[in-house]
Length: 264
Ligand code: XBP
Ligand code: MG
Image (tube, rainbow, N blue to C red):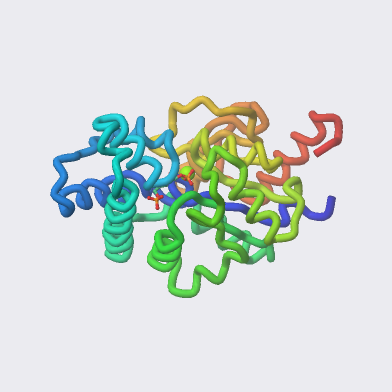
């Protein structure tokens, strides 16, 4: 293989930033208030609901849980769409106000990959407007242009854990999965990336710290790490602490391939 990775495929929610707690959850709860609903999701409940990816799908699951008849009555889908549109507006506002911050090491690794001429892309279940808002607010106005492909939201019918969004992005990049690296925070995201055949780095977020992964990634860490605080976890199945750089990733990939008998 030529130099690896040829592309980094970034998940957004939980991976780039702790968007769920800092952005999505407060936006959902405010949207409920604005719509005159007495719904309120606390962090424990939200943690359970997060196993359903996609905001509209999550709303539908919740509604079916508390009032199945109303959730499937005529007009229910429109109500969900309206609630979700309001939630997106509120989320984008919060992001624009600087209330969602990138996780440690994210900006550093994005810049390192840019300097090395490595292609970067986004593969997420979240709404495209949310992605644009987050990239602009945290990395600057032109940052959306740093990503050759942005795969987001409803462009594929089946959201993670289905591999569809990764296949959609790989198709547009014109790259084989094995030449790329997916960066994910959750079990659903990991399942999607692994099913698409991607080497995978897991950087667990607050909501996904205790999740069981559906397979074995190259790395299973609690973050990417920075000079001020190293990341920790497993690299090639071995305990590891440090800062995730392209060199660290390349070495892990080489070791993983050697252990697999030189394949992959
Ligand atoms: C993240 C999600 C997203 C957000 C909400 O999953 O499930 O749905 O919670 O976004 P992943 P929308 O990080 O695996 O992509 O409300 O815009 O759907
Ligand atoms: Mg995620």
